[in-house]
Image (cartoon, rainbow, N blue to C red; front, top):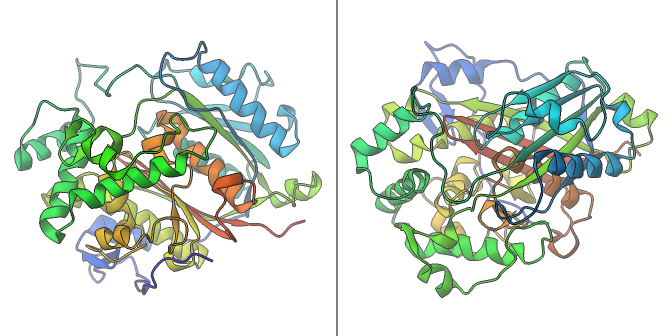
Length: 441
């Protein structure tokens, strides 16, 4: 079984801002809000299981004649068929998307059925899909519902992301201002600048190299060759990754995720529902799940690494490890938010897969792929699979469920028993989830 490096878990915290010095990712952060967040009860209610997943192939925007209701019908139908249940069994639904009118969630589900259930529309930037999943999980966990659908989709425009509303304050204004003050603002896509500058900071602090970032792009494209749902399924040489057009140093085009169209869905259920419908043979338990939003350190510490969410990821991971009783050293397979290769490396450290500053060594050792300590992004990740914002978190969920069920075909991680998911949206929110194959059959 592939394992991550052995690390010591931080001690439990009292939540008292006067006495605690919050430990996040095995370093200290003096932040009262971080302490308060970590001091919250980690008690979980009813156990929650994923009993069905489905997704569309991710496509280049405009390359396929479909619209978001078509995407949602395809992924939702696949998830229902995977679970072996009818839409009539679904008691509530949470639908995530970033680009669309306010009730696209209802319209997206018309093709599955019009049963009058509550439908919630969710937008949380690139973590939208996992936010929908988190909300659905809480409905089941809290005893409100026994069966809930989480679905995400995106119909995107070609090219880099840009602002849609120019007559009001942009929610990323503080991020952009901080980056401009620290590193200037270039004629490159803003997201690539933010994560590229985080990569530059890592290079300056720890000696990380452009080659190490490029190896991540090489790995993820190689992994995607075996994923029929991936937008790209092309393998490149390392030289090909390095020589691709430069977007923002050190990021070449093949180290940046594309915009994409697509959808993903998951069915969550209680233990009673699983047993009643005979779904124990495919149920995957959510052992822990947490969302973290920005701390003061996102801006106050004048760090591009923190600006792009490293403390959010650390905080959410810490809580999930406490909830599950498992740590990064126990994980076999990971799907994490590699919007850019720089962020994948930074996230190794935020999740505790390797010590802080050692991400480059982790890459060079081949610890992040088959035959290494843990397989990261067997799907190809955002870099190669694609990134339809509202669907990404649910596509990650689908991949990890297939891995734990032994249904990932040529990309199967041998002996996978524990899986970790990480989905990040600037603005900002990070959602981390731990999964384990259930024993309810």
